Every structure is written in C-alpha cells, then in structure tokens.
Image (cartoon, rainbow, N blue to C red; front, side, top):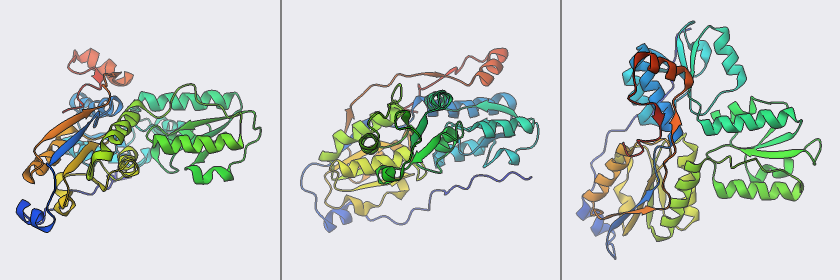
Length: 359
C-alpha cells in the first residue's frame, strides 16, 4: 500500500495588514502597551525526546523514516521533519514491510504494537514516559479487576492507546456531562485515570462528580495530568486576569494548546485566540488592548513564539515581562532502541530530551 502523509494545514499567505497607526485610530489604547510572557511555555521533555528521536533516526538510519500519526501535535514540527525525510502515516499497514516506524509521543495500544510486529517492522517507541505511566496503571488495575474510568477525549490518540491496554475494563469519560451515564460492576472497585493533557480544573470537576456517585472511587497512584500541562495552565491563570488579550501558540489538534485558550478566558482574559503562526494573528485583536498575554502549548518550538513577539513589537508591544510560575528541568532518556544505535555509532550529542525548551 502506498503511504499517505498525514494531512496538514500550512501557513496562509499574509494579507496586507493595517498599520499600527490605523489600528490605534480605530480604537485608542489607554495605558502602557506590554506583553506578559508565560513561563513555562513550549516544549516539554516528552515532546523534545520524541522530536529528537525522529531527527536521530533520520541521521543514523537515513530517510525515509516512517512515523505513525504526528510525532507531536504541531504543524510546524511535523512539516519540518517531513522536509528532512520523515513520512507520517495513519496506520502501520501503510509502512512497507521491514521498514522503520516510530510510534508518536501519544502512545499506542498493544494491538498497534502487534500489527507492527506482524509486518516485520523495526520500531522505535517514542511514547512520552508520562503516558507510559498511565498505560502501566491501566494494566495494573485491570489485572486486579477494577473498572477504570478514563477521563479524556474519545478519539484522541493518547486515549485510544491507553484504552487499548484493557478495553474490557475501561470506560472513557469525556467530561462532567457524561458522569451520569457511567455504570460499573462493583462500586467498591473503581479507579479513575486521565489523559495527560486535560484541563486540570475540568478534570477535577469530573472527578468530584464521579465521587458523588461512587464515594469509594480511588485516585491514581500519582497525578496523571502531566507536569507540563499543569505548569502551563498555572502560568496562564496568573497572567489572564491582567490581560486584555491572550495569544496561545499551538495547533488545533493539540489538546493542551486548546485548553490554554479555554483557561485564559475562564480566568479573566478579555479575549483569547490560538494561532499556529504569527501571520495568523489578526491586528484587529489589538484594538483597545494594552496588555497581551502570550504562551504556547507543550509541543511548540520557541521560534514560533518569538515570531509572535516580533509582530507584537511592530504594533507597539515591545515591552516584554516574563511571568515565571515554575522551573522545569525534567529530562528523559531517548528510546532504548535508539540509544543502542547511538552508542554503537559513538554519538553522544543528544542522549536526553527536555533541555531545549527555548530552541
């Protein structure tokens, strides 16, 4: 079967922008123009690890390197890797027998692993270790015959992968509105798990409602929502009450990026928009705006944020104040299949993911 690349929307050709003077004339700004720049933002350790894995595979094995689904949910990253020779496919049956395929950071079900094995594919598993943790929790509690309530978005790759670990034990709960529909075999043996990139507040509201129905509902052994998702939401919560406008850099299929827009509005931003690229920013958003908050999702390279900041500077928002709410220093080793190749080749240039969040 001929491989089919994952469909991507590319940056649009910029229209003629109104000048800063024209925007100011339409709605004068009262107060000093400034940018509140969230920190942490952008690449998390799991994303960095996955992207490096594809780059290193291309470097050492040569193109083409196949990747099941988007390695991370970001248009720019996927497009850049395609230019280097990566081929993104929807399923393993699109990969030629015996070829190399990388599993994305979002994880895969055992059925996908078996499919790759049946086709004789060489594999590199770039699943984020924090997603792998949730998979192991699902396996553990299914083995103990628990009903597992998986809070997440039905159809999201991460949820599909986790649910595939124990489909007969797992129910997917899309949010608080689905709590009333949940049925379990034994209310004394129920645990909840979650997708790692959800809104912290909405997830805890879902859990609250679930515990009203099932008072002995057990919590996961440790937080399932990943540190990066939580940290980025905390940062935008601090900025939003002061912001007339919040711009979130991230792709439409990035759950954590979409959540940042929602969190900004919920916590007081007067307006909030998501963009993939600076040329998607509408200068009409600046009318009457003194303070702009800026952040980016966990799969967004910093270069895209800097492009937005340059555009903002052109419109008078040249003063940038970084609002730091946490420091991130987590590192993940590259996938074991790749580490062996790098060691044999004497390549010690990058053995860890998580150190280039500002690249």
